[in-house]
Amino acid sequence: MPTSPDQFIFSDQFAQLGHKFSVPQTPTPLPDPYLVAVSPTALQLCGLAQETVSDDLFLQVFSGNQVAPDSTPRATVYSGHQFGVWAGQLGDGRAILLGELDGQEIQLKGAGATPYSRMGDGRAVLRSSIREFLCSEAMAGLGIPTTRALCITGSDFRIMREQPESTAVVTRLAPSFIRFGSFEHWYYREDHQALQTLADHVIARYYPELAETAQPYLALLTEVCQRTARLMAQWQMVGFMHGVMNTDNMSILGLTLDYGPFGFMEAFDPQHICNHSDTQGRYAYAMQPQIGHWNCLALGQALLPLTGAVEDTMAALATYQEAYAAQLSWHDKLGLRQVHEEDKQLISDMFAMMNINGLDFSYFFRQLSYLSQEASSRDERLRDLCVQRELFDHWLQRYRLRLKQEASQDGPRQNAMQAVNPKYILRNYLAQQAIEKAQNKDFSEVDKLRQILAHPFDEQPEHDHYAALPPDWGKHLSVSCSS
Ligand code: AMP
Ligand code: MG
Image (cartoon, rainbow, N blue to C red; front, side, top):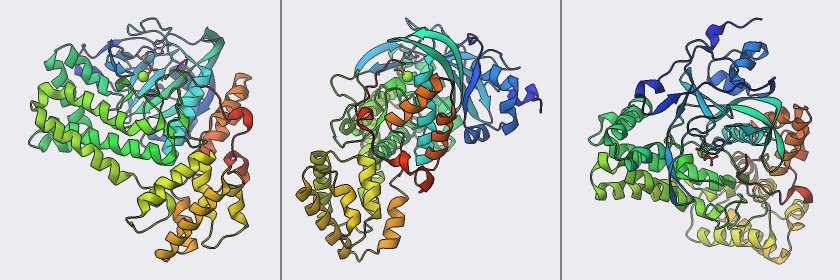
């Protein structure tokens, strides 16, 4: 069925902010594009019918080869702190905003150079585009706030990274891609008028309830701090590591944004660094919650000209810790309904035991959910993985005792645990297998992974092997910023 170009009428709300905030930028066509992947749920989110996918216009619009009627593509400006250091102006160096569909901003990532590309080529490789596409959809499946991915368009056109690689464009969507760094930009330029315009826009559009409060800008800061804190807790609980938590990658809506060298924790090590380029470990797993706070501090500073008082700003920032603690629940992961004082020790001993035994984070919690009150042969699955088995046995014994203390019942506890401990996560090696197939023009594995990861808590017994531990070759895949 032919698609009417009307399906692709983008509204251009961002442009109404004024010319300071973005520049018109037509995408650079992608030579001979083809469709690599589509997310049907993301399609629904932006109000597009399933049939549109088979129309050539879909491919043309989302590869950046054809500008849809009424769309005025643009690149937005922002700045940021990178690895704790003020980096000055950055901006959409390879992302181009097409406009909005059904309230979702639609952005092409990798659609060519913009005035903000600096030394970059404005492109993205197929490898990183697949990683972003799959992880966006996987995070949504996990129930974690995130930007979404609509589709990937690919091309045989190659660009140079560490080696020549094929290019792709990943189409992302979110109610807004505005970042902490979007505010820092105007603060450091001392353009307080622009800062206020941006804050008013964000409040009116995304936090309308805050407009009624006595101090809307402080309320905005408080709300963003709390959303960020909750997001950090959600990341910690599934072992997600972002890898590049620079302030330009922090969403003003509290979404997981800009998937690069991310990873999910496998052999548990709180100091694990998933980004090969992060030599200091600034963004190591255990650092994420405090880096989230540091980033909120940077936002708080940028908003000072609007909020006025340092003390009030510090009070807004102080709500971060509380929001983080309220969201973080190892009790849920362990299937514990009550909170006892001694649980702190049980939980910290659990992490120490996991670390010493190199236990796989997701596998451990999921396997724990299958165990019953009484010891059984099922225990061996975890026990066999341990180098210090007595340590494991001892901890498990204490855990079982603790379950007895609250008269825990196997069935309900197992169900509750399985609803919060995913069976399927996007392991690096799974992504790598899908990438290698896709590089040979077989896109089936990308789609299969997308489908499995959309329901990470379901058993899906036919896909058991996707929940297995990584093979030796897949344990230490190096992921750098190169994308
Ligand atoms: P990231 O760390 O990927 O979030 O990117 C940091 C900054 O570098 C952003 O301003 C990006 O737009 C820009 N950037 C990253 N890769 C490229 C590229 N290949 N071409 C142009 N700009 C890029
Ligand atoms: Mg970025």
